[in-house]
Image: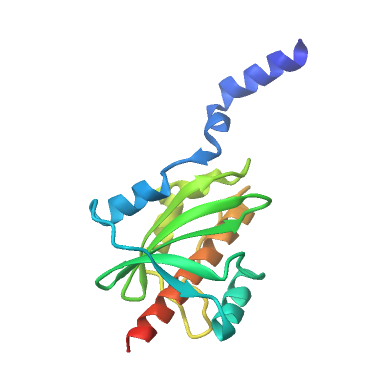
Length: 173
């Protein structure tokens, strides 16, 4: 009985524990929002050859798929990517415009800790970020105490989205 009372007390004192993980926005709804309800047809970029190696370097491991879907309208590309935080994937949407991040949105968070990365106070740090010549973000992204692995996952995904956007734009030339 004591442990049940303690659990109830913790949930009353820290209601955020109930909201930690979950689906914040369905990927389809994110795309509809980004493209004002007129979502273009998905395109694919293949992770082969040097591109596969750069993505491996960015993430610290191979991406689990050989192809990545993206959506494009004019100078904007949209990517829905996943990376493991501690043990579970974090699904994140990125909008890139002319080589700079326009939007970052955590769509699905499955971890038990680190969910604070979904809030604008964190994701706004990525606004207008680009890649430097070493394929790293051109700015420092401040971490969140207790969310180190989730923060790291989003930084990796941001770099990957920017790199893949570069690759798509180079194909146009």
